[in-house]
Length: 118
Image (cartoon, rainbow, N blue to C red; front, side):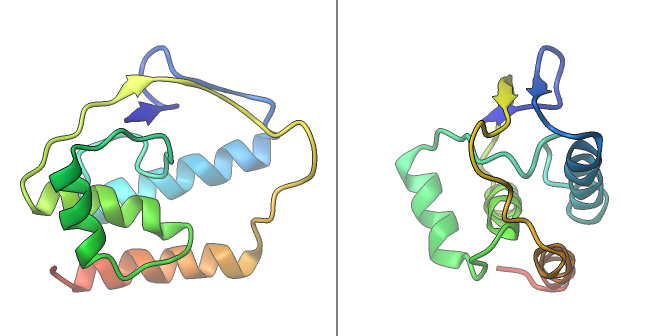
């Protein structure tokens, strides 16, 4: 999986607040769920078909926390993840749609994952 937060990975074009939000989200995911990766919120992944199908079949999330849930489920089901550095370039047009409600949903999603086993 592509990682912004391993050696060689980086983020270009984000504000300090957006970068801090991402790093805090990843820190919380790592502390609460122990997903086995540094960048649990990365959407850049390559999957083996059987791993992807097994995780998606057990998934219950449909928002930002979906990325974390898939990595968490993969670890619980015994699949391995390997991170490779990527350069993530922020959008050049438009603006982020991340709202406070999304942050609250992400936090509640982390807690519900912590309390539930697949």
